[in-house]
Length: 253
Image 1 (tube, rainbow, N blue to C red):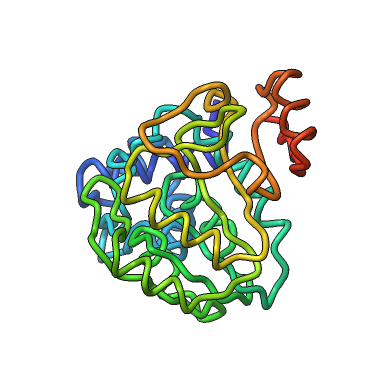
Image 2 (image 1 turned 135 degrees about the vertical axis):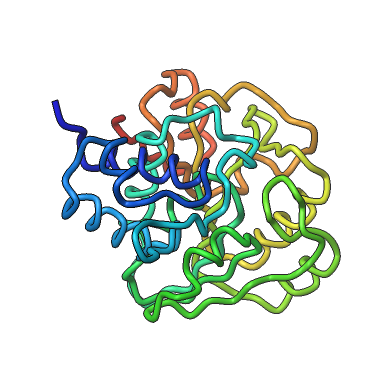
């Protein structure tokens, strides 16, 4: 049985990521697809900034997803479905602020082609969007956290003070009834300033994060306007979120 389109493209991306460069012939053998099919897949992956097509193959140009701390929590399909739901909420012409992480990176992929202003402190997101002519991109500077390629600290915070956007899209390390948590004190400091810059805060997360805290406290639960999550969320947490006055979007995965 042939691979589904998304599965094949994900397989190609993983192969190119692991090897750095792969020939067209090797990719055809690896995924069991024709030359024309693999060429179309490479054209798509090149278009979203994850690879660069070369003579006879492809080279990796994206951010290694293995560097992201939250990689293990959600399947690629879950991330993609959640990201699509968020992208559908965003209208052309909006200004959007995006934090780093694998789920927000997937949201950025889904925004390719829309006319937007995007502000981010994430190098992977900036790398993805920098060549998109419809997107005006602003990259926030600061101390670059090596695990994620995200700019943090005083310089990032000071830069964010002059920013105003319609929406903030952010991921978190944990959610309890006391509020939201993340894994790094510098990250939380930067994200708190992001909250100040946005009219609406959208949290993208998976159901495993509920009921768990992380190292650093970010904010009370009712600071968030909207949570987008997979359908593994429990009835208890549905009630907690809605009782806090937060809009909840549950994505069937």
